[in-house]
Image (cartoon, rainbow, N blue to C red; front, side, top):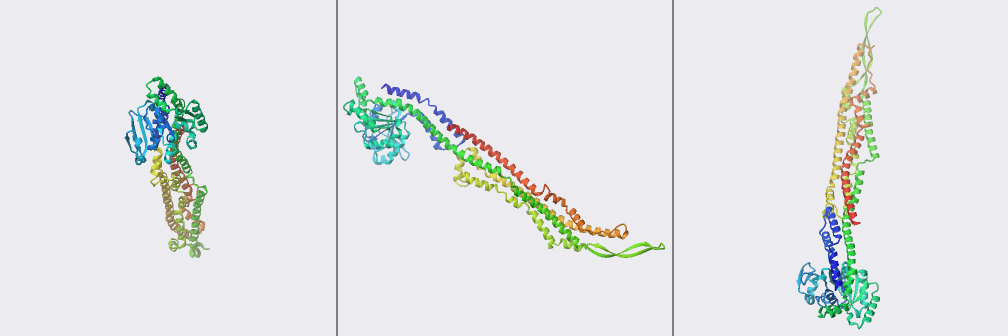
Length: 607
C-alpha cells in the first residue's frame, strides 16, 4: 500500500513543475505574433498544454476473457468495472478521475450523453454501432494520477478495433498486456504481440493474471520462464499476479489476513513498474513528444514563409536586372539616330542640287561709258550672260506636295516621328515578368481564384499586404514607360513638324535670297562692272544657305552628336526605371529582411 501512496505523492509533486509549458506558450505567442493560427493548430497547442499535467495514461490490453476487468478493479481497489466490458461493447473505455461515479457516452456524430454504469453490459448492438468511445469517471485517488484505457484489443474481427488500438498504443505512456498465466504463449497471442506490441517494448508490461490458480511458486516460476521465452524482446518486464487476491484483500476483516492476500497478489509489482519505470519515462517521453509536436507546428509555418521567401529572392533578381538595357540595342538606336541625320544631309544635298539645276543663264545688254581719243564721253553697249532663277516656277516645283522631292522629305518626317518607338516597345513588360513570377510563386493558388485569398491569409500580415499589392509594381513601371513613350512621341513629332515647317520656309528664303543676290549683283555690275562682278551662285553657296536657313546644327545636336535623341532616350529609360526599381527593391528587401528575422526566430524554436 505504501508504494502506491508514495507513487501518487511523487506524481502530484511533479505535475506542477513541468518546464515545457513555457516553451509551448512562447511558441504559440511567436507564431500568433506573425501568423493567423487556424483553429486546428490552436487546438493542438491547447492539447499540448492540457497534456502536460495530464495523468499517466496507461492502456490495458488483452485477449477476450483474460481478466482485464478484474485486473483493473484490483488496480483501482474497487469493483467498479463490470466483468466482460470489452466483449460486450468492443469500444474504448477511458477510466479517469471524477467527483462521482458516472459513465459518459460519446457518439460518432459528435454528441454525448450520460448513462448508468450497467449500460456497458446491456448496450444494444444498434446503439453500440453509433458509439465512438466511453469515459468512466470515479472518485478514486489513483485516477487523479493515472488514466487507464480499456481497449477492444486486436483479436476482434473488426478492422476498426485494430486501428483504434494501434492509435492508442502510440499515444499512451504505458501498456499493460493482461494474459492468463495457465494459458500464456499461444500462437495467436504471440502473433498479436509481435505485430502490434513489440514496437513499444520500453513502455510495455506483461501481467500474467490468476497466478492463484497454480499450485505453488515453482509452477508460477515455470509459467514466468515460459512467458519470458515466448515473449522474448516484446516486453520490458513480465510479472505474475492475482487480481482476485488483491480484491479479496479489501474484503478481509482481519488486517493480517488482508495484508497476506495483498502481498500474495503481487499487485504491488505493477505499481512498482508504474512508479520506477513509467513515471520517469513519461516525463522524458512527454518532453520528446511535446518538442516534436512543437517542431512540427513551427515547421509548418516556417515553410509557409520560407517558400515565399525563396520566390521573393527570385523577384529581387528580376527587379535588379530590369531597366538595364541591352548595349547592342542601345548602339543600334544611336546608329539609327545618326542615320536620320545623314538622311537629312542627303535630302539637303538633293534639294541643293534641285535648286541649283533650276538656275539658268540669260543674255543681258549692258552699257559701258568710256572716253574717246578726243576726250569725249561715249557709251558702249555689250551683251553678257547672267544667272537667273525663275523664282515662281522654282517655288511651285519645290513646294508642290505631289513632287518626288517632297515625298522623300515626308518619308524623313515619318521616320523621325517613329524614331525610338520600336525600341521602347521591345523593352519587356514588367507586368508580364511579374505574371510569370506569380505563376511560379503562387503555384496552385493563383490570383483571381478562390484559393488565392486563403493562401494569402495564411501568410504573415506584412507579407499579406505586400502580396495583395504586387500589381502596383507593374503599374509603376507601366506608368513610367507610358510617360517615356508619350514624351518620346511628343519630342519626335515636334522635331518632325519643326523640320517640315522650317523646310518650307527655308526653301522660300533661300530662293528669295538667291534671286535677291543675283538681282543685286546685276545692279552693282551695271553701275560699275570694274568693281562689282556679277554674282555667280554655286552648289556650295546654296548648300550653306540651306543649312543656315534650316538650322542644321540644331538637328545635328539632336540626331548626331553626343547628346542626341537616342542617347537621351536610353539615359531617360535607364534612370527613370532605376528610380522606380530602387524604390521597389528597397521595399522588397525590407520585406525579406523582416521575413529573415521571423524565419531566424522560428529556427531557434526548432533547435
